Image 1 (cartoon, rainbow, N blue to C red):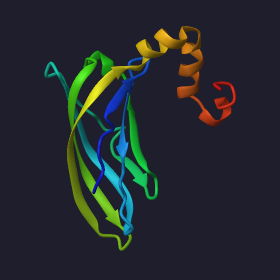
Image 2 (cartoon, helix red, strand yellow; image 1 turned 90 degrees about the vertical axis):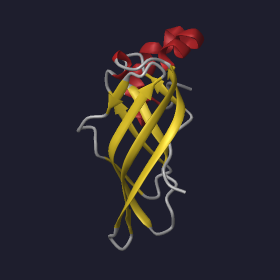
Image 3 (cartoon, helix red, strand yellow; image 1 turned 135 degrees about the vertical axis):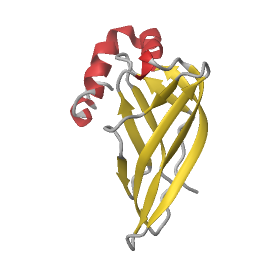
Length: 141
């Protein structure tokens, strides 16, 4: 089935975009290595993810690949967008098989959503996103 994009990707309050999707690993697959990632918003603004944070390496059996792209909101606007990604799937026998995909998704302003439902928790949320998340799990409940 191969990797995909999530239906909605969110901007953080600092303009970082979290780009992610399911890995859909098969039983004989060991690793996903994404070497190309590009997003185009509804206005034609294009973000080609640089290196670093590429390559994005995700080991099986992780259900999701993800990367945070700093300052993406300075380039992309919330709303409909498309993305392309490519790289390789490394099999258990070491063989690297090319993989690529295209997806349509929505870019959403996660900070605006957070401000509308819990304005007093924005600072806590940003601290959580930038730290050891396990430490904060009890505090955000």
